[in-house]
Image (cartoon, rainbow, N blue to C red; front, side, top):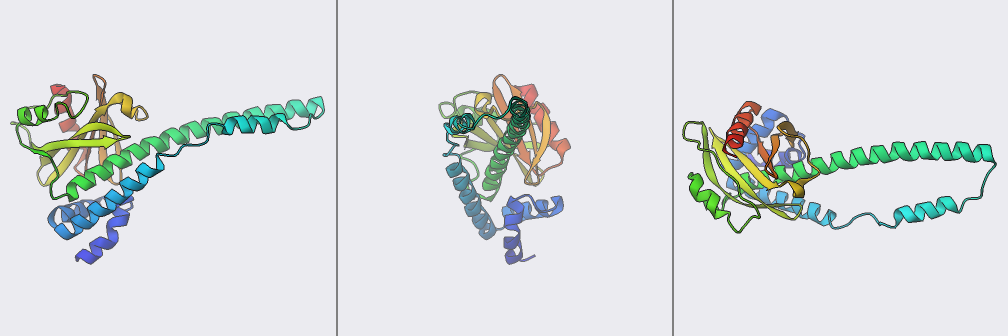
Length: 248
């Protein structure tokens, strides 16, 4: 398939609308084609900039007060109607409030996972995917000292199918974290590590999810939240997660 045809599929790729097979083929193409990788990186950076701008604005905290004043200013009605209206209002508020909480939590969680997927794609598309290049965990781990507000352990991979490529600092919710790159066969997996308090809206331990057609495995340990993001089989993701948990 020509680069023009792949270029037309990039937006669907970023929005998670391609099939799993198309996503895998396009991921491989991005690793092999500098022109498409550059275009992909530019689009990801634009998405991240738009998402960051959207997080700068929050609903007016005085909104609830204004709504309460509007309700209080209504003329009283007969007792029975007032009671029924109050009951109906209370039930409606509970339903809407519960729906809002669940929807807001789910949306915020998917937003974080989507941002991690974008960072993973940006790494795949970059000509310089890591800032410290080494297969030696004793070289990569010390590099992060003073760059992230925590420490972590990396596993010995000598007898496994995984290879450590290197790492760099990543940011989510304006919080610094570590991004480690592992390779298995021709695939790359990103490991993101952040302080759990900075990722409080993401819950679940050892859960497998998907984000933009990527598999995501997440767990916590010693106050840190770990995310594995990649397009490899979930069995490989779980195997690497077990190695990381044992090292931790």
